[in-house]
Length: 252
Image (cartoon, rainbow, N blue to C red):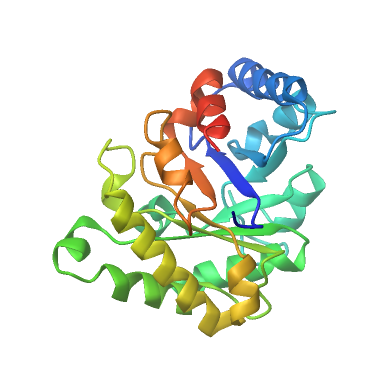
């Protein structure tokens, strides 16, 4: 059994209003409080405007709070963006950077993701750095090349197991219900850990949590979380229902 503590992270994406956020986060916080000692850490990443609402709903629980993105700059003329310091100030301990939807919709490069992760670190946030190949890249046999190059480019200097989580999300599996086989997932995760060792050293890489993020749900969570190099999940759709998200967590 790995010493790495399982992290079950919920990415709410652009979903929810105040009432939904209060019910979802509050419901999860109650389950967490009622469960006593658990072998996993639970994180929710709501849209930025809902962070204060969620912070209030989870107060007094061990639930962690995160943002879905941050800007690389500390402050300034960046309309519509959110600084890492603002997330920290609002009660966040984590922030997702480089999600495939940001890489695709906002043309974010590895260099941009690297700068955002560095900004997160500078403000005491744990960066959840997302990597993963598209269907075309997978079909072309480039899965390992793509993930290796994204680790090399997206993980900033000074990254450690304490301030960084990697989330592997095969883009073709997000929200599609399609998932790679368990063997394929383990192979990629083991490769990612080896690539991470080149970047931050074998000792830190061995302690770093690598999450799986492609259509993890209550049906497949137990099998995926049992894999040697899978240390949790970055959950999309299944994180929007209390019972589904809790079922994924307790699969650990």
